[in-house]
Image (cartoon, rainbow over all chains, first blue to last red; front, side, top):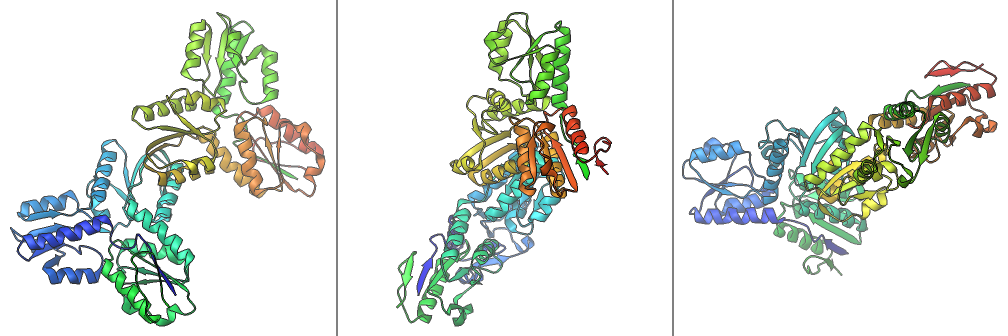
Length: 292
Length: 292
């Protein structure tokens, strides 16, 4: 059995940066720092960070003056930032610079007189953060809703950095005929595009495909959908323990990819487990590893 | 046999306006006025206008001081306009206001720092006119060429007013993933969109479809392509004389549409000829006419 791990699997640059900043902040704050919401959508990494001294809170009112607070890579709205400043906490802003760029583009569109449409999941923290930067944004996450939009003179578009490429393409295509003056910022980050393209390619090549990442991770779920469409034997798992041995029946090749919030050690566990199920083998970094 | 003529068949507002302005200019100039190129892409209407005193020239050097010159609905580049002014001729500018709007949008894009892409046929006079308003435009008329474009930071798009809607939609869709900051002006005029949509609908409903208009008319050829795709029994004709009676065999319904440059009288000739072939009948304006 051949196992192929996508080169782009796992943490993107922004997530790596946020995790490093969070770990550093715990050290600097003397062993305890807080984070608004889950730093990344991966339960097991969250557990690891908790063990290091990170505290995850959902309610900002739980903060006390002098606390160190990490803003995760998804970013927040200016109102949240103001609240934190008023509260007198130490802010460690780990917002991904690519997400900050979306904030700036949304603001620019509004300044130029474009009604702002954010393509993405209205409940995703990144989208909530982007929406907080403009006065009256539309947030749309389905083509059905795009199709229902009326004809418009002007519209400015930004999107969630982890949006599905084909959704974005189709949405812009529909908008092109509805809007006379359409300004589109493709704010899908390059890590997302590369990962989605590689996932599609790999899923087509292999017999069985694993997509590793939190079930609540938006970008992992999209990778799963992309792979599943071309390979029915695609499984979305959070850890090696979910793998049923019969999933591997009659399979000569296995492909592995992972969402932006999946740590390297989780990917390695899965690879080692698969090699073990097929009587051992060696993992030689990203690429092709072969069992006997 | 039922004959259905599309409501939107024939002259659009801009063409009607240009023909009226041309006819008026002949009268005002004492029976002779010149036009740069064919006023509209329809040989028979050109013949009619010639008989009224219109002279069609291809070479601007044939103009003499004091001549009255009509700029057709397609518009011209600023350089041509300057040449005419220097020449001391009387200019009757019948450029379609919707085409002038494309000129202004292309200029605006360039002023805002967007490289300008014109979607359309590079040899079409309207596109040549638009291109003349910006310094270094790209002109692209095929999806293959769009696909070959490199990744770009910025791009501004305008299009020929008579562009195929589905081509425009697909082109913008491809560009959305290639360009980070994409500004798109959908400059397809509403007459074109309505005519294309109605042609598609009608062609699906009828047994035989006729698209009337010059073989060199860009917008008529597009109507023909749209209809042909859904109805193999679609014919592109310039006049009634091309109709072969066997085209109507086993047909209960006939649909008719016509390009923006097809005069009403040419459409009426075709309808009357069809009614005659099927033993008489009455034309009751745009809608459904029934033969016995």
